[in-house]
Image (cartoon, rainbow, N blue to C red; front, top):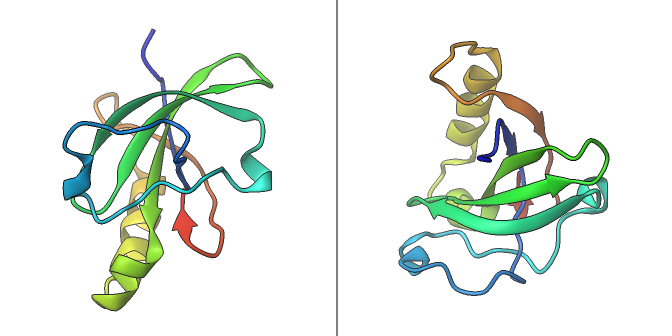
Length: 113
């Protein structure tokens, strides 16, 4: 079963190498923030220029989700953190069967999820 929704926040280094992910400016953190401790990484899904996406299992409801992980520093050094905030704001309002829904947004000192 594929993940049903998107949670934007951190990432994990436990997963090993995702082929081609070195092209992404985001490096996965060693662990999720405490607020995301109920999520267990399952497998990498993909990556883009500024983010990586990992499939997770939610221990509370048994559902699989996708977590998009964005490292803040590469965006901050390029003056793009405000753009990320705008995109998240827009994404949270979208409701369409062909667009992944944002369920929650989290962050720590280094990453947004």
